[in-house]
Image (cartoon, rainbow, N blue to C red):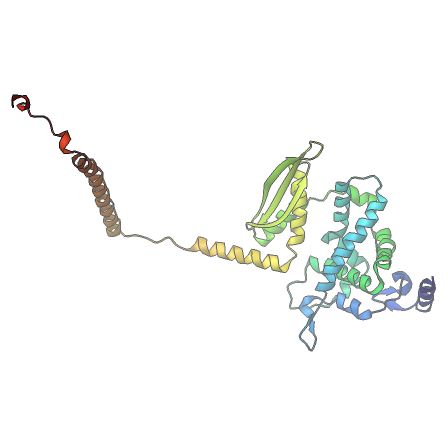
Length: 316
């Protein structure tokens, strides 16, 4: 109770103060550790380093914010859509936390104008704004805690910029998005049905695995092949954001390309004739061994008892 009163006093005292383009009253709280929010807007191309060599940018906060967003949006969606099945809730949450939606939200609240990045970096792409938004949520969580972070998302973001009922009806084709990305990146993507089984109610369930350059990138299950492919593609889209995974994919592609480019050893005509003669000679020797073997065995198997009786035997 006392903490709420203190927070209300802080909001009143700082209501006209601006912080990253928003007034404190718009934030709904007074930011405490402002360094966290500064870090949340520092792209890796503009990384800073501590005296001990630690790299400072928004990537760690982005990792945290991604997990917190999943939890908060899942909480909000669960309470908003009572009685809806797990698949519906998962798809609706995915539509909210997908990169395209987060990019738009970042622009709506002005984060796109505040991100610090190197102009030499080619990473200034559609991922940057959404990544910064996730990092920003991570900063709010560390600074204010889960409940206030959820309050910010629900009251300041979702209620203002997202129609939950409308977005739940929106079709998102993750498979098409992944294929489009693969074509732009010139990478091979395949969808493999790896398992099919029955659930406890005897309904058929399909499990699909997405492979990028032959490497597993995500699996998904569903009550149809299409649904399992969509869920697998959704996981793969998240996976390709992992720099370590993408480095492995690119290395695999380079190795496969190098192997394909290696010419097969050529043999001249003389070598072909010599090899043919060697084969003929080996075949003849093998035939001789087969022919001689029974003869030797028949000779060795005879004993003195097997010698034919003389026709003059009874004469003596």
